[in-house]
Length: 71
Image (cartoon, rainbow, N blue to C red; front, top):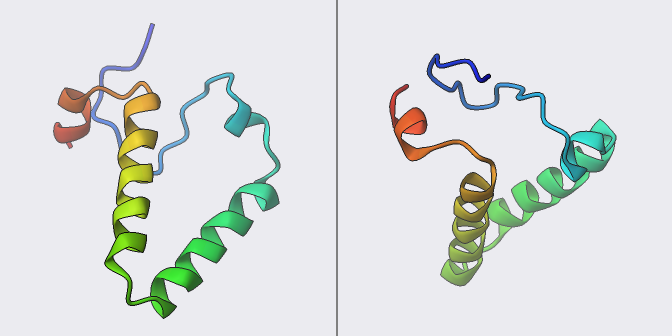
């Protein structure tokens, strides 16, 4: 079924999802925009929204907390 080795952050996981079917350039554009905004902003609310988005992404990715902390 799944590989039981620890999950490496950024490691490709072969799933059939909307994000997996996107072109790489379509994924890089929002990442670049958020990176630039993160460097230019001083708003804590912006950072909380980004942190919440990352946590939501991890929760919906299918990676268990045990596997994530097992690195």
